[in-house]
Image 1 (spheres, one colour):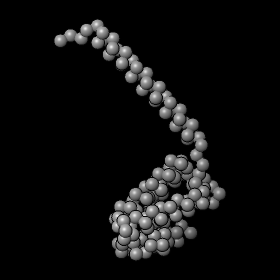
Image 2: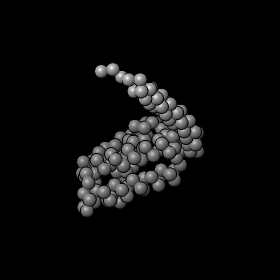
Image 3: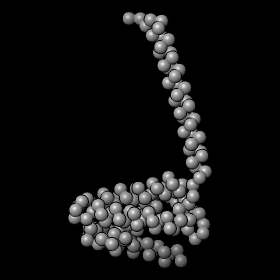
Image 4: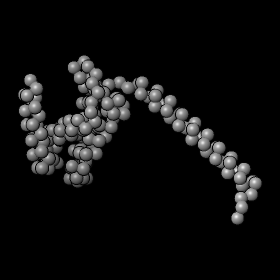
Amino acid sequence: MDINYYSKRILKFLGISLFLSITLFEIGTINKQIKAEKNFIAATQEDLIFYQKIGMAYLCTATNNVYDLDFSKTLDVVTTIFSSVIQQKHGGEITERNEIQKVDLLYLQYQVKLNLIGAALKNCPDNVPEKEKKLYDIELERNMKIEKLEN
């Protein structure tokens, strides 16, 4: 079974078209990424508080008796979304003490998780499982010890 002349032309045309479209698409996305990276504004304290309030509201609503979602899984989702917003919208930068600081993603997720659990304990303590309360207390105590060593 041999490919005829017209089939070869069609395949060649489709191959060239596909190659050009992929190449142009890639160049376009590279230019968009470069332009987008220049417009990052570091997250301010107000931004962080706003994101935390949204995350806490979602966490409390999703884990109440009506929806009854798993607290730990919901907390992981909210933490990931919060961290992604900081990474994508603000370039992973936070303004702290009038200085722009690039934050590590894992450290950011750790801090976000602690802050969200603390906010949930204040606003919807019945939704927070005992295991999470104990882990929060342990981590809070550990952070206080670290702060004392740094000072």
